[in-house]
Length: 76
Image (cartoon, rainbow, N blue to C red; front, side, top):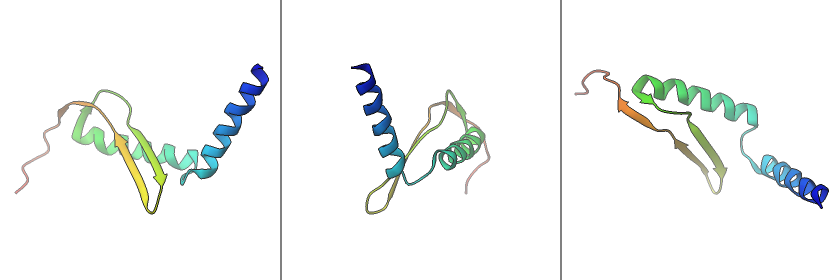
């Protein structure tokens, strides 16, 4: 029974990768870049999480938590 479960999990993972608009490597680059940019603006409390799905357009969801906004000048 365990082998059947393992195969189902592996098949689900393959299907998710095939349907993903970004490869795992590209997604890691995106997360690192967003982490760098957001860390310059906020004091983050954890990692940045990104989800990219394809519908009629690309839907990009970014989640990050911070304890405060860093001072970065006055916007006029």
